[in-house]
Length: 332
Image (cartoon, rainbow, N blue to C red):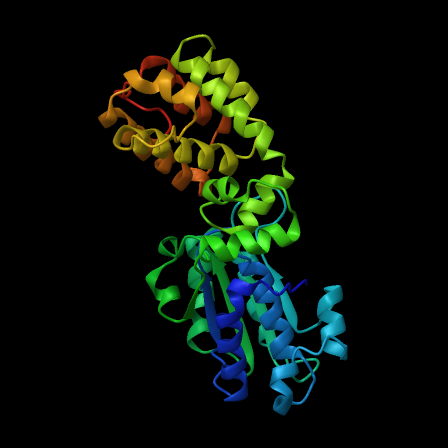
């Protein structure tokens, strides 16, 4: 497990160090916050911190990175560290997976430092799987730490959330995020990528690595062509379907918001001059309604979804002046 030292996580790291030093480490943590803030690497770092074999008095230097436990975790072979996520090609964590984890947690610690389990994304637990986890959360084995990771805490049952200590990850100030990103790669339009990534540095970095600067231009040109009825929505949907749903929906949400802002601001052309000009005929109320439709699509990503059909339902309205469909086959 990698554990990069992200500067925006420093307060949370110090909180965990204090809890360990004062022997007040909780038995369950809920790591919640937007995607792109490094919640999974943070959980890996906490695993290192808890299982590190350096003396407790040396909390400030833990994890040491040299002991047997640190080496095992780095190699992904620690017998007391478990990682639970949906099986390959599946979206849900099944009850059988949770039962297997609970059985492993009930066994004696191999290294006598306790056990750590990371469940992610926790929102992918089926209702039966979540119920199966409850008893372990209510009556944890001594020395066991469960970490649940989610960007959608509201999707977890209240009974699960109430039994965890919540660690909230928030986006850093734009200046801090841009400074960190610039240190990774200079000469990139990080403010724009941060905007598209919701202010999350790792989301912006992922967009850059995916070549989003070029993709941004092609998305904008396609949408402008749809508004002017120079492109077929189904053809555009076919091209866009090769991108990840998160990328497409994030871009559509950002673009729609910028078009709305452009109606109230005389400064600049927030969505690009060509697109802004083409969208002048779109009614403001319809833009707001469309934004709701995009957000509904994002919420539906956790459920089985025909992505090609979903894209078509989101792109067709642009060639029809964003006229709301009386009956949407995807989102109701």
